[in-house]
Structure formats: C-alpha cells, structure tokens
Image 1: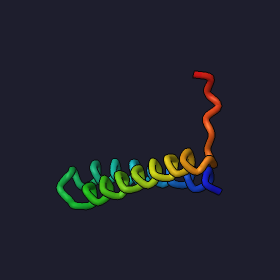
Image 2: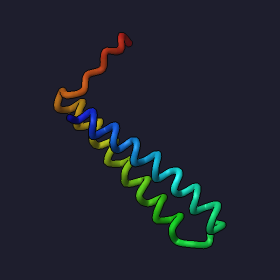
Image 3: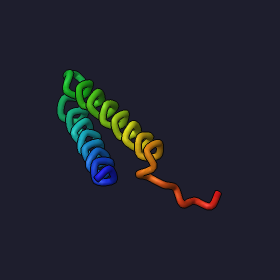
Image 4: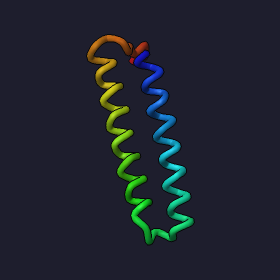
Amino acid sequence: MLKLAIVLMLLATVISLFSGLVFLVRDAGQGSRLVNALTVRVCLTAITLALIAWGFYSGQLVSHATW
C-alpha cells in the first residue's frame, strides 16, 4: 500500500512538472500559474520524501543493497 502511494505521488510530481512546462511556454512566465505549479511540485516532492522516510522508519521499505 505504501509503495503504491509513493508511485502515485511520483506520477503526480511528473504531471505537475509538465504542467509547469506548459504554463511556462503558454504564459511566457508572466502568470501566477507557473508559481502555483512549482509550489504543488515542491509539496508533492516533500510528501513523497516523507513517505519514503516513514517507510524506512516503520520497516515497510527495506533496502537490499549490499553496500
């Protein structure tokens, strides 16, 4: 369940990234939509990092790296 939430948050972040690109091209950086898209993207990324940290803390996510 946690992995699905992380994947969905990453997809939402990518969608927000491309919407910001569209707003940048369409508005030429003169509107507030670009700033709103950046704010949403930063919040989504922070939530994703918090979910990953919670997953490692709770033991739901485990690293199998040998290093």
